[in-house]
Amino acid sequence: MRILLIEDYERLRRSLAMTLKRSGYAVDHTGNGSDAFELLRDHSYDAMILDIMLPGVNGLALLKNLRDSGDDTPAMFLSAMSTVEDRVKGLRTGADDYLTKPFDIDELLARVEVLCRRRYRKAESVLKVLDLKVDTASKRVSRDGINIDLTAREFAAIEYLALRKGEVVSRLEIEEHIYDDLVSPMSNVVDATIYSLRRKLAVSPGSKDLIRTRRGQGYVLGEC
Image (cartoon, rainbow, N blue to C red):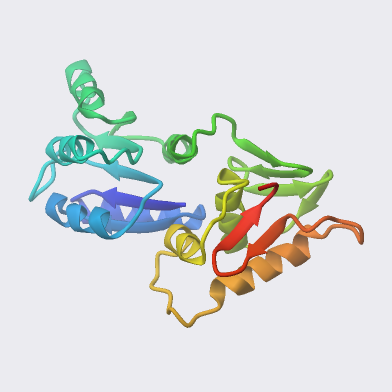
């Protein structure tokens, strides 16, 4: 999942970005509200975390502008402004969540996980595709009761496909949502990840191939 983090305190921003990346998220970050508009214009995000007091454009104005333009990216304010009035104003501006500073990192990660599922209208943390289970909370995958050991990138890919089960997902969409580094158009990194997933998901000789290729279109997980 790809996250946009907008926080002007650089030390906190870099620390949060690193924590999110270690948890398997692709992360873009900036300390300026105006720069955030550029990132939102160029990329599709599964969730965003933003402060209120920002240089350029403050967080409230930024989110209101996005909502007025029809952008429904799930958003959470992360702010030191902690009164009831502050929280109510933030939520009524269009935020899906509001967490005050100081905060517990495990709580923040849990809230980000919920925001990402909300993007795809999934309420439960365990995503099921036939006999496959993808646990977005524990970052574990199993098939027919057998646990499957995946790399962080492989988990990110299967999680994204599971959130969009039954849909054709293009190679570009996979790149956009699980890689925060620029991927060369000539790279086969997505193909290599899908190949590895297929191999690992084949837990027995008779296992059905859950990931199908639509030539020229992308990949489908589960029935389509």
